[in-house]
Image (cartoon, rainbow, N blue to C red; front, side):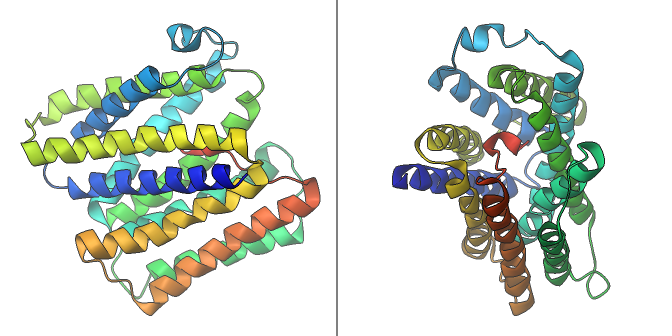
Length: 297
């Protein structure tokens, strides 16, 4: 179990480095070229280095339920574009603060769409999480940017993706769900790059793109391995380690010094998520954690 927890921590760390690499490329090339390059690298590594069950990636295109599979791929595509824009325009910690609203939106959507019963503890977690985001972003006390709206949209779309993933979990293979997401995102970002203009990356930019793509692929592979070694209710809290990485990488690489309000708000957001995990352990004996709920590669 300890090995599974360590792998999950490594997975979220590599995701954080991938996100930081995306941020480092902001202003150097279009968000579509960044997204396209990351997806090509990450997708290629996932196909080459993972061995799914059955026929694997060769027949990922076979679907039992085409509509939800296509819907999830499109949602993931839009979430990916908005995510890249958010990371390249606003501080890392603020992107994560808004992105971590996604589990709270899942709670709300599960009540509306899946007719799940939401108890007072989960509602308390939703309210506390929203308060934490308000403390970090502080609308009305500081100027908000389009990037904040993009990060919020990413969180909403991420929640929709997780809801769809729940409905598809027992009916479609992971290779089908992930394969269509990669395919759509590569085609869209590739087409958008030809329209907005392709910039040949310099050597240092190519290295940063490699970090972005390899980090995303490694994160998925670490998490896939982690869930085979440890129960999901033990792995769920490791997701919030990304908040610490956001603060650390933002300070070290981009001179983003969070103030006491931001640190407090991020701690509140982490507490709200852990409260939800703890409550699910008590209620169901397991946490509803899904490592493939992350829609951005």
